[in-house]
Image (cartoon, rainbow, N blue to C red; front, side, top):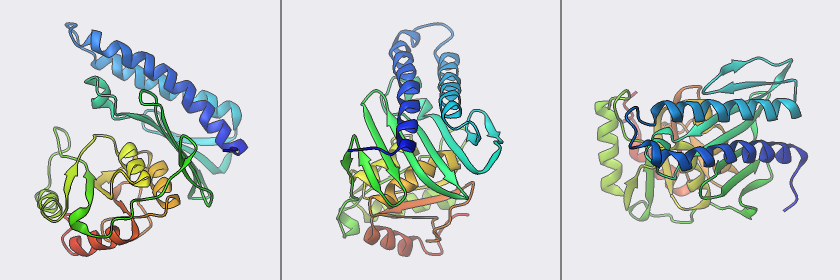
Length: 265
């Protein structure tokens, strides 16, 4: 598949950052037995990937701004374009030697995401999408799953944990969804889970309190694969910190109806 100049820039940046993360991931198992533990090491790997992405993308598009999980907002001279970056989505998985983590990069132009990449360097899965041009996994065109019955649907979500305590309503929602579907899964990385909706591995995904770097690339991926993305009430405009519900057209509609007037916040 021939890539655009923009996508070539993005792919080159994530591949370079991904090589560093893959090398660092190979060291995590050795660090598990150390007295200090791997926490500081993983934080350093995260920051290093962030710096690599900023440097590579900045070199190719020097006027663009940035919004990254690690560095925050970096204003560019070009106010219409900014990169939205999560250099290591799935940090806890990385910390525990679980090969489910990703680099997520999106380009926002005049308030709309026009391109996105989600890359797992260990599994060598490169998800790409450009607005109006479709979504791909390693150059294979993606389509959301075709299942139309909620009892057959496999749904992904996040699980509340230390530092992100459960809301009573959120716990009730999880129970309602689990009781009406084929089951729920939690990978611990919103970027990959949204990519899995785009690829048809998941039928839907929902999560509260996500940031733009968590969902910017993944939301575009789902939409370009023929799916639908909204907040939990069905509104398509996602806020800077809010809920995300993604799925194929039918399952998404079913879940919005199921959750109507039941969202916890």
